[in-house]
Image 1 (cartoon, rainbow, N blue to C red):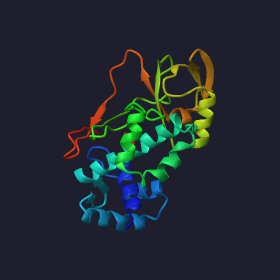
Image 2: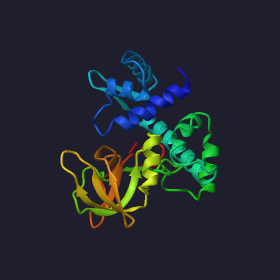
Image 3: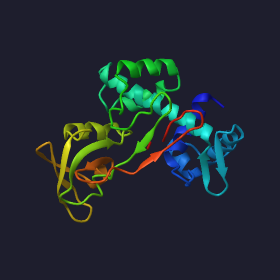
Amino acid sequence: MSSSAVEDYLKTIYALAHGERAASTSAIAERLGIAAGSVTGMVKRLAELGLVEHVPYYGARLTERGEQQAVRLIRRHRVLELFLVEVLGYTWDRVHEEADRLEHATTEEMIDRMASVLGEPANDPHGAPIPASAGRFVEWHFPTLGEVKVGTRGVLRRVEDENPEALRYLAQLELVPGAQVEVLERAPFNGPLKLQVDGRERFLGVELARSLEIEELNQPSPKRKKLKPKGTGGGRHV
């Protein structure tokens, strides 16, 4: 079992399992693009290593040790994405796959040096929070543009990063973290949204709108889910 395969499983289970909910075998298989039977065997092996708790008929949850390793991997990935954009000049639609490849071969020291050069950043290019080197981590989420009401005004905070074509399109619409957004109209039957983005009118399909998270003005702070991996002194999106 390669270390990169273990890391991919840990990161995937972390993304899929929330609270007491386990990550199902089928969901893990779909996310990784492999057969469900292969997932079952790997989950059992990870459980033997003390990284995963196997829940029969439900799936898998990370142990404290597994969660700690997953958070370190998320830090690597998100620091790499930001370094590629800010220092090497990559566009935000190209960095996810590059970071996926590099995260398995990069040392913790190199990641810490990159983070230092970047000024110990709080978020990656897509708005996702970056865990601190000590493991402190709050994985927050805001409501999506696809679910808020007409008239909602706020700041775009986070964008899903796995679809390069969608990211290129969103960049053309200036729908990037930090943009001021107002929902002007919502067409019926899951039709497109009419938005005002930094003072300009834009139209966006509802499916793509569900991948954008907005911090509404005059609303309570988002629900924050904290993680405290054993031995890190820290706290816990994805």
